[in-house]
Image (cartoon, rainbow, N blue to C red; front, top):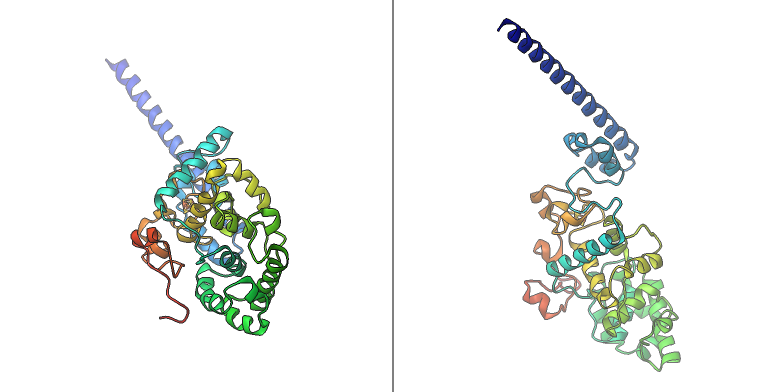
Length: 344
Ligand code: SF4
């Protein structure tokens, strides 16, 4: 009996020692991870605001797997469960994840559409050129006056530039934009009989029209599939790790290869809509994001659901949309038209 008691006490002692050692080790790793995180945060401290938000990332997430967590901080995302972690993701898995994201977004934005108001290809090409460096809303508020005065390419080709500049002033870069839209109208009249051509190779020859504008026109005025790689599209596909490319043409090719051609135009709308409403450049609303479980960048933005809800824009935040004349499906879903220039 005595021998058994001695044995018991010895093993209890041993267990206590092991426990102590384990918790000491854990504490050390917490400290190490925390200071590693601090170092990374400090390195990234360039914009003061960013450093402040990095500081907010709870240390306990980092301690779960310090190595992985550090890698995440490098990618500006905290440790958090990701349903399909893309590290080492196979091509097939990537295609599946990308298509699933698009399907989910189609449910979130079933009314997604081009956010520029237009009634014909000429208005769309002009509006798209004007949308550089400004919002679609601002363009939509400006073009009614422009198209009322110059309804055809012939009218705009013959316009007095100073008068056009006055109308386009709210769009920013109004002198350069005036030059572009008058120039492209002249080219439409001279080379295409006053009609907007429906081929990529012709569209990109027009002054001020690049591939991005051409695909917007092809996809939305001619029903030809096209991927629109704008600033939102570039940011989101990088966050989702669909491609590591940075050149818009290469992004277009890489993402195009993940989807059937017939999906390209709607895919562009879904991605751009998500970028404008939820997955913002500076403060993505991760806590209110319906595709968070599929996103490797979850946590790059606000994860608190209540705070994230306050970051939502346009109809998702209960505000008016960008179009003064949105499609009926948008209105049916509770969307509101944008106010005209100078209203409110
Ligand atoms: S909002 Fe956050 S979770 Fe959603 S797609 Fe953007 S980065 Fe990912």
